Amino acid sequence: MSSTGPTGEIYRIDWLPGTDLLHGTCHCGREHTAQDPVEMWEWMLAHPQGHEPRGNTIDE
Image: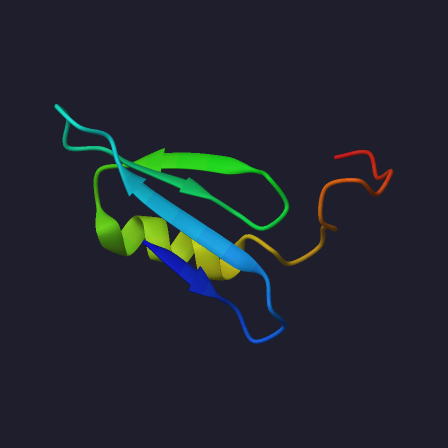
């Protein structure tokens, strides 16, 4: 499943076959794994604050 944010960023969540895990990728390239879909979406919606997309030079 992919979703585009209000500014055109792409957020992606994939189910990992054979597990109960979801794997999310933010528009910046950061990744997160969770079993709970609500936890995953909360991470997705809160995560982009304070960082830039890949390619920019910011120490995290």
